[in-house]
Picture 1 (cartoon, rainbow, N blue to C red):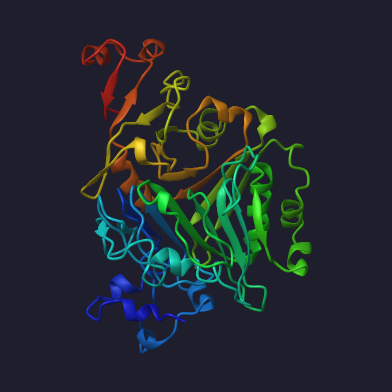
Picture 2 (picture 1 turned 180 degrees about the vertical axis):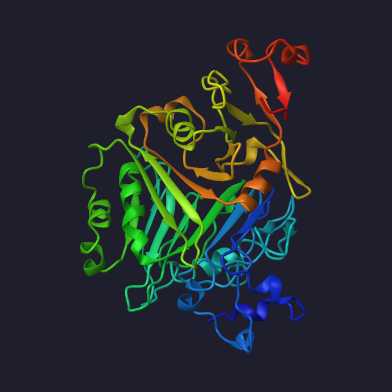
Length: 419
């Protein structure tokens, strides 16, 4: 197995190597990729010479967030657990990396292309997804499965839920936005047509006891499962996981579900999953997330011509983040970015959502994964500081008169002033 310690410079301070319980965020821009999270490697004694197996990695860190914005290129050490490595800049197949809560306070350039499995975070995290391993069995789901054209599904969810079926209590959940990826047990192939798009890749290291809660949320979102090799003994011991893989009770109540999980290493990062079924007829941003978060939200996603910014309810505004945004010193635009995320306004919540801000999703299933962490929130709040109100005609009853005095146009305001 690839020794992750070998990829860490000898002069790297221990404070940057051992960041237990600290999530890592990678952002990819332009044509580059962001892979994994800087490996939260325990480097004490002679750990630098030891092989980081999946099993050991599970206990080392909680989660990694890989943001691939307009770039995808980087691999890191792979296993059944969340792993990582770097990020890059525009016009290159790499990405930008950020270690939330760690010594690195800024986005850092990624060194490798996303297509290079052995050196990129993605390749490392997916090491035992792209090739057989007795200690890693998994479910892979994607509305556009690898090499399967024109699949009929209303889901937009993409991810991998994996576990160690042997004695060790090891599991992880990957949530991403990349179509046709990964190819289960068929090698690492990053879709070349996706390299110039912006993507989001989140990996959470969890305990196996969290699997059934995740399965319950996924059941409501009805993802298209294209691979499952988890043993029947493990599936049958988890009622929601069994119903998920068998496609049971997909369209029956409850029509919305909220489940809380935490990452493995104590004290654990708090993660809340919100999902809604297609029969609910709910718009997930307004009817689910704003209601559950009890705050306003700032949204980064494509939008249609129907849903607009919304300030009808005091302290429950929906503000659309304007394009371009800046991650580190690189700009990204909605035209090339397929990630969908939001932050609470105010608060410390960051959410990855599987559906864009389109009216059509009211008749479709959807799921959002929300992380409660001040560091992650702070970085995305900086990215989303510019927002826009597109329908101020409906807001005049809720805003002070002096607010409109500064409007550059009658029905359009772009800025970062909080309401």
